[in-house]
Length: 88
Length: 418
Figure 1 (tube, rainbow over the protein chains, first blue to last red):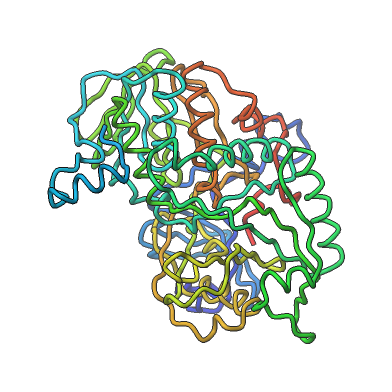
Figure 2: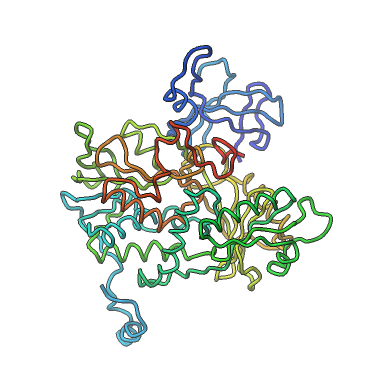
């Protein structure tokens, strides 16, 4: 069982959260021509690192806020959590 | 190679079974090979076997970080099926079913192929309609499919919960009678033994640490046992694909996730089919030892851990108990996890790459075991002929760029996120 520290509510069990995937992916800019290659990169391509991973989680059964988690994909250790606007 | 037969069994019994040949050797790597397959799992072993058998390419090495049978080929729930709706999947997996049928004879190794039938349960009228459509698509591709009503399911699997007050009543199901199970360890050992006997070097405990690429062409690999030159290299490493891709400066449309499975304590024979829950993700069969073999959803977050967490197991088994109430009385014997190369449309990738002589086999999600022979057969073709076979033409890497996804579930991208 993971224990995740929501930046708004504090430490809660994994059961309250939903996973949102890689937090480093950037959506192509709005209102400009976007090539297939750029969409491909944004929608499908993922680095999927073995080790430290910056990811999004959603406190879906709690405050319903999205936030960032830095977690190890080998040990599942969570190093840091932060609000979306913060840098990790 | 010494044949496994009744005659040899008796002969060796007189010698106290001390003179059997080893099933495969433990060679030191040569300086150069025609083909190196990275990954000694089911798919890698099958690829090497078909390279030798179908294409007479025997100067081949399999490089494996761990040991034969230690990865996903020994961690799955052993289910075989080809009950897919899309042509690309149906025809590919049916090729696999053909190879499964004759595998024990081909490999001279009993893989305990058991076509006991797989039943996908339906829990609504809409689901019956969808299954009817899928069944028809399967039959158009020459795959056996039978639509079962509630009473027919009841006859086949009487211990399912058929009471009136359940949340997901059973309306019927779609059955593929030729689906079933096989013994996964035997598949790995059988392919390894045959590949070895045809001259393939199986190099275990040898980790790949880098690649030698010159002017867009593969020249060899760097490993913990030194550098090895190769004309062609095939990647066949399932959940570790992204790790190798990083060494090649490639970013792929896959993520590595964790899938758990479990078995109960052994009980007397009660279930002679494979049965899947239609209102969630749970599948169940009974092993020859009597254990109920069960699995379901991914843990749900990127992971290379090869071990899971309890919340997902609890979720999956809740579905199991909804289906088979008697499961709640059983003790759990073992649980384990493996890491899956989840592709973005849920379908695999078997293709050439932008690097000349480098071939890619990945994206099997949680369905790689049944694909073992077809994956090896088509990947061997692609490596040997330097082109895709019509059976794996749809499984190209470029489909994500062009939008030609093979979206079996009709749910769009990342169908495996619940």
